[in-house]
Length: 130
Image (cartoon, rainbow, N blue to C red; front, side):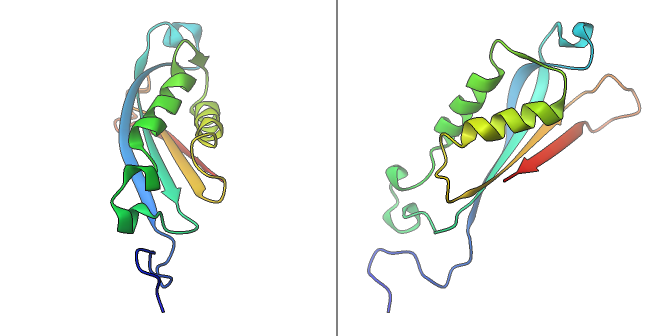
């Protein structure tokens, strides 16, 4: 029997995915490439161990706030330089652990939109998860 207002116990692990967080980042192997910020896309997926109460309450306080996630990511990339998308992705994942409850799983993809290699036409990305 379900409790009124509680998510169904039969639900699998729901996920929230935010795609295409576009931020300017000083990213690249060389100092010249890092000289000017370039567009980087970030995708974040949260896999909820238990369904967020917001599914039944319709209250922002009962789920994850998108703005809070974006703010945490901005803090990571502002006034810093990164050589590798791998390192940047891990730094973002680590930062988001302060925003997302530890029982939930995180996946972060960082996409370098225009790497300086003409043959790469759709970017280069790295995904890390816990």
